[in-house]
Length: 507
Ligand SMILES: [Ca+2]
Image (cartoon, rainbow, N blue to C red; front, side):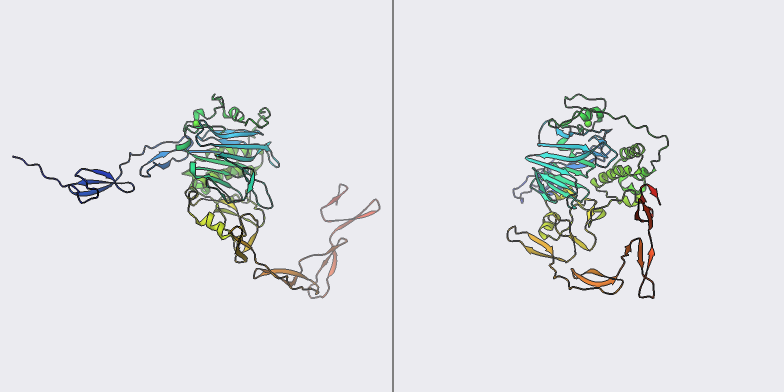
């Protein structure tokens, strides 16, 4: 006679479990009662299938709703730069110029009330006939307009529903920040991030929400390049150049497309400036973002524009796309001055700065820098190039362009807004001082945050009637030395600085 071995239940649990019971514990753990003992294991997840993305971006890990299991997904990244170059979500590269408003992204089946429009117009100073003027994002009840103009030293123009806002700006649904070069919009609810820098844009959407449901100049993000050049009538064109024009918005005047005759590419073209894209300067980014489209565009640009400076646009766009995926590169310093960026005074260029600059307003700092919220994961550790206050100074407020010496501001709690408001420390007027000795001038220094006068050595030269007063060492008085030319024409004597001309006579 055989006997079945007796098993024990887990009757001591609340609720009690029988032998073999399986139940979900906290988080991603499951419990199993086995012969009176509780065995805890991780939820079993399917083995993630490796995928290859048509746009050459590395696939990203995406967790399911419970946050326990993950799978690979491609990223929908569409970008354009230097006016003519576009790369669709799935990586199709094309060149297009048009002076209208166009849909970059629209949903095929409206789900999230999200679309993106670009407006191009005539270029002020450029090799191109049209330049991007603005990006407009439509989301729910919001119209978010971003353009770049220099407005009293603040180099961005952001409007939300027709009203100007200053960065950083945040609502329950979105946040806009600017580094002075790049303006970044994030919408956590649909995991959207858009970067705009005047001559370039970058639109990043999650495949899980938008996969197979986008149309416009950025194409359908479905990991398949074959349908990228689809026009509004759903017909697929043989080239995206013909497709791009047909996405102009209904209410914009759009002249017929004139495809300019491309300039013949010079047989001998020195595009070596573009080599930086594939050099070790960008080595850290090569593994995460394919550079070939940027390198090709760079060569094309340099050879047709006959100006090496245009290379900077393609290099900048590659650097911006690298920054999007978390790799910030200090590349301008490696171009030997060719691509130097000049920030509006008093700001200075920083290659890898924060998206939000620290200000004297502690309420602002708390809200945008120190508080962790829905926006934080989308901008985690992201660094980008931008214009910032010089070392030793702090930006007075987000809506000023004033950098004050650290500690030179006076902050108080404003009774109307209940925000901390900071202003430069008030200073008494400096004592009057007269510098009467020869060779001395009034000099103003900043001491303890306030101006203080002193008499300093003159570096100013006096030029009168073509003679310059020069100091003579060891003597009280200097002497006058001729430093200009004189010419008498039509009974009038002219004084001319060296190398200047009058009446087309070179002197
Ligand atoms: Ca596609």
